[in-house]
Image 1: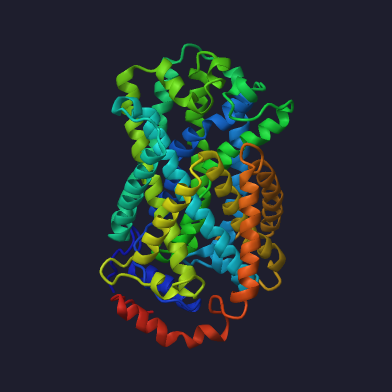
Image 2: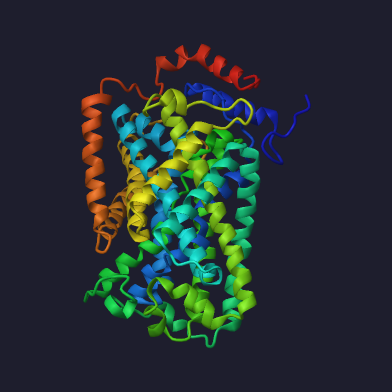
Length: 515
């Protein structure tokens, strides 16, 4: 029998049928269109990580803390911390390749209550990361082009910018995964070559090459660092706070899991994409950030720029024409980062609503027969991100809340997996690191404690109260309303009962795959 490619070069109809068979075995219909290749799945996480977004917009957290050591030593350490989570999650994603992955993992490895908690943590993290990315894009746009366009960094300008770009990102997602995949694939290449071009330019025009900066610690807290961090005596604690730069930047790799149902050979390709996106982001991010540190004419003067350190460095180092060309590349990459994040948050909403976990689930789980995308979930996620940033416009607080909730949502299923490993969780996927999973799970839990401590320090102490308030509200909603209503994802005999519903759902969107 002749087979036709379904999700990229090297993939056949039989690959797709095997994916659908696995999905059916978990009680779900193939409603979304499965056409993403391994590179496309990698590119969506790589695009959300977007070293040209978080690595630039959050640069002040590191350089205005302890100086060059925040890049030379802090960046690879932060990358390792993110990588620990990615490896642990990859192990689980290979065993359970479904949209909204973390929610299902929390339910299957724990119970419906832990799954419900994981879903809300992940959903809030994804909504806030979309807000953080697009607020960061606004900040970059203003820093790069604001003076030229006569902008004044007002709240109204920021909110207008947020509405326009978030709506356009939602519209592109609405029109189908094919268009979104093309753009996120392009984004992957753009980030690769853009970071290389930025590094080459900065190295070429650097006034000197003092590499000792990369392991030199300085205390730039208070006014010496432009007020990014309050005055403090402990350089070690400042270094810990600076780890928020790589940890915030290198997150969002769970997007590969969220698009599992649209990826061919998902059990193989999703875990590889998750780990690969962290690795390559770490390498290329380190490359161009080292170039930034080396190109700085004077470290004390640069640290004093605070959040403006990147623009100041570019302005005093590069010719105007080259600088503007690189700014355009970075801006496009940041926009596509938000585009990929809309994809991720919408799949999370879709998957959770599919099991009745959200208000209005009947509406939010609908898939367009024409575009094969969860259009209601797309526009809901985009709207929530805009509303959140309208309420909390301070970039640093948004970043701290994002980091805390996303990594908490990672930690819950990882911890449950540690408890269930080789006990109730005995069937692994094709990507299997064996007993090393236990090591990575323990490291993830330790890392979560460090991330939480760093994320609630002034001036971001508001993040602590947002976190506590959310957890209290979540507990109240669960015990008062959801504990007796929410059934969770299908498990055991419930899966067999869904056969008729699966056929009806696939027929509604024109899915004709034979299993």
